Image (cartoon, rainbow, N blue to C red; front, side, top):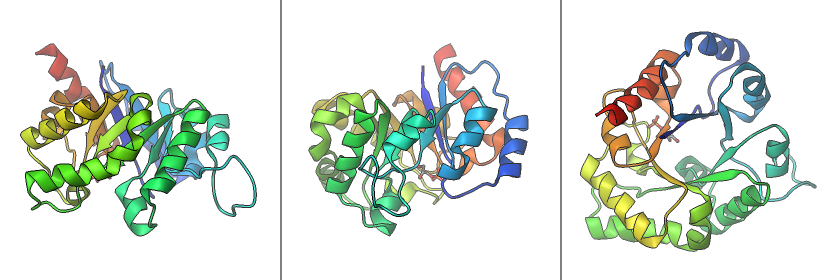
Length: 232
Ligand code: 13P
């Protein structure tokens, strides 16, 4: 069974979401499908769909004077199962450090949800050694937590660019992670489309899909195509 995660990022309004789920009807899909809408629509999705819920971020305290933040305890209360932590957009735009990300991971685990820890090199042209070195620096601090987490390999340069690594590159990174520790699942993200999804899902446990998950029919085709892998 593959894990297919839709990260909608900061997109969609209520009416669009209702329309989305009247169109999204994957056939013969045995994968675990997780939707990560903006916080404000988690409740709507919990009422509207049978799919697992994921949050795109969280804070690392349960409650208190942290204006504007959302705690893992609140997410758990909403029925959330997964929380994305350390997405490159959070690392880069909001300057989240590995130590902040680690506090978030610990809090998510404390509330019996599954962290989806994102990592990946920032530049495409980096050498193999430097790529693995950068990845090592990102995941090293999480070593003891990896086996309770989903790891998402998302090369920063592949996100939203329409450019993606080769299957061999992804395989090399999955092997490298497995040498460190075996996560609950290791998924690939970064310009996943219906054309390349099978390639990446063949060498991982699943996918983290951004842009291509915003259109219900595109995302449905991705979910259906993944099934063909097992049929082979
Ligand atoms: P894209 O699929 O749009 O490249 O986004 C990937 C991503 O960041 C998912 O978390």
